[in-house]
Amino acid sequence: MTPPRPPLRDLLAYRLLARRPDHRFDRWLRADLDSRWFVLRDVAPSVALVALLAVGLAAFLGTWSWPDVAVGFGIGTASAVLGSWRGRARRRVRFFPEDVPPDLGPWLPYRPSGNDLRRR
Image (cartoon, rainbow, N blue to C red; front, side, top):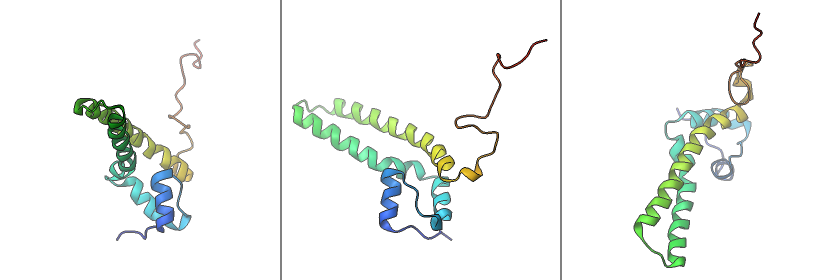
């Protein structure tokens, strides 16, 4: 069974501004972050904006050529998808800090460097 969704205002703030919904919707938030469609839902608004800007800029400048628009759109989409994959982990840590193991730092698990190891 799908957990209840937050109200539309909170849902739009979460989708567009990455703001956390109320704690009553933690089950829904966890399900959303773990969903296979998270990247698509997260990227859709930014990809639509990139497409609109690419077409609008090309029309404004008068240099309307599909290859240029396609390259700009492809670069913007790839950037958004990569950012979303990294953003999922960051949101999980930010929204649910109690789930992070204590030996996990802000970026990676702690591994001593060569300078930290004492040689005898």
